[in-house]
Length: 328
Image (tube, rainbow, N blue to C red; front, side, top):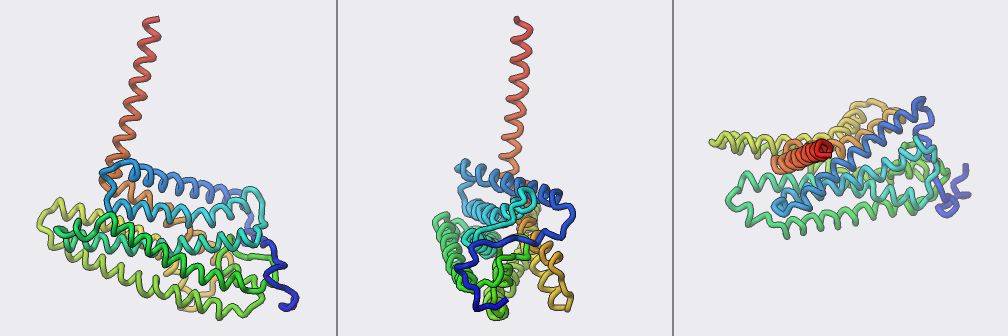
């Protein structure tokens, strides 16, 4: 197929073919739908609880809300495509829809890395400088840094997606399971190496910069926790840090596994690459709200109060119903 016969303008849609070889497409689609609904439910609960309770309007909870927003955006851009392909059997995605989904998918990916970094810095200051924490980490500064991370992410991902948008496309077929940068470049009639070199350089920041930095902050935190004399404070700090580490590794583990396998010479076929892509896109947004609901004391207490209040209201209504029935 000659590259000169095609341009961006005459490819007005893409066909998603990443699932074509699978036998149980409906089952996989149902599992992805269920996972996506749990992601929306979990992150939605966190957002509602934190936003409606004034005493939770603190830097750490603002950062949790930021992560919840990122997780919803990150998972929505890929899940909606996969669900429509698998369950609704709508495999065609318009060009501009694919480009926009690619943009917001990578924006969510990049912003999540930034959000985890901010949370690690917040915990480091809280444990290393507990007396000065509230003067250093304020709500206004937290909002400012969140805004700056989003601004930087918009700029970086905008530059990357502009490269994909300007590429000439040879075929309207995407062999991956949803629209992302790699799938678009593979469909373009260009030498992919220069395009992937750009993303490799950009990914060096999160993988080789921010991830080691976050690990170092938690190493410092672990050392600080061992020196605490108060056992209850030590237990609380261990619980907080362990929850953050679970969130951190749920996000980075699929990426590191993929990179490690590639570096040691393991060739991943398309199915395996798609499997890693799905895990990397859905596991972290699913785990994050669960971790913060179950391991953050204030959120756990509020959930328990809401559940007990609902349960007590149900019992009262049942008692009233019985009383009315007996009196009549």
